[in-house]
Amino acid sequence: MSSVDFWMSLWTLVWFASLGVFSVLSILVIWFGGSDLLALLGALRARHMAAEAAGSKED
Figure 1 (tube, rainbow, N blue to C red):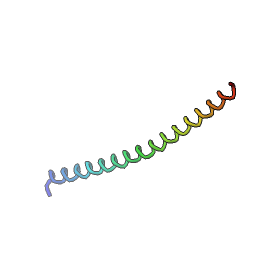
Figure 2: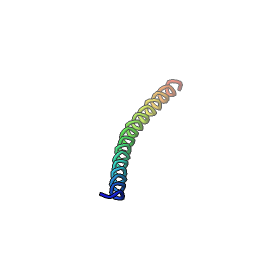
Figure 3: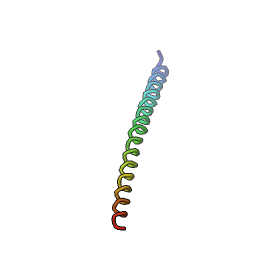
Figure 4: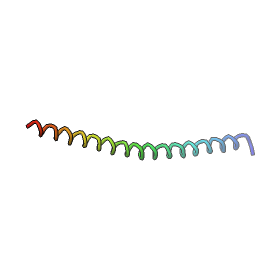
């Protein structure tokens, strides 16, 4: 095995390992970002309903 083959193999391994890490992190960001977005929308909906209830009591 020549030196060039060693470096090609090493950088190929680094390339695919980094692609794997990027893929896992992308999936985690999508998953947890989606759950955070749903929680945010739920909190906004609850706040909106509370504001409407408080507004209708004043009338």
